[in-house]
Length: 224
Image (cartoon, rainbow, N blue to C red; front, top):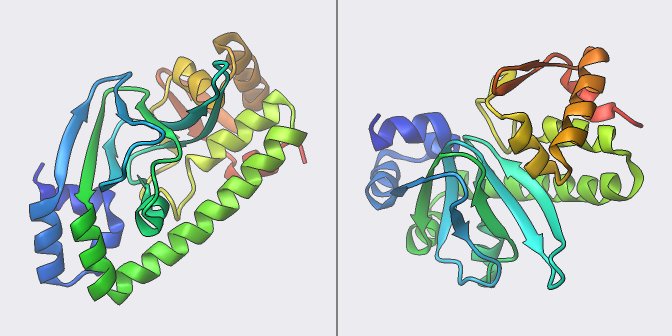
């Protein structure tokens, strides 16, 4: 698959660019294969690129000095992250780790800022993305403090199907139960138990190496 094909599939924001802008993005984009467990970036790193997931699954998390870890979200194919730190010229605020073999793209800071200076459509996309990300993290604080494990897992799965942050995803996502446990920050056994509960409620179907969502609104409301 060519870079231009990858952009059409997994960088929907690029479709609003003019031909010259898309050509520069395609020329400057660096695509990297990341085996499972690869640390794509670390908390405190200088931010030199905007990162997109073309295939696989990436976890954003942060660790405390005593070893405790908090997972913020998972990034499925079509998701891009790191724009906040690029805009604020600040160090990375989290670790990004490939949960499975993944293909990621890095758009250099210079190209990102060039688009900011020259594309109204790109600015509009970023404004919508930042607003949606803010809502996502407000929700994260809420369900970390108020919801039980079943509801937390339901919301975490629902977030993987956010149509604004991760456009183009169908009702099925390739993710194993072990990967989901890592993403949510619970044991595999607890994740399996919660998945059975949600499946019995008719909200999703567990398939081999994947989850099929049957009621996205129901997952979002679960535990309310």
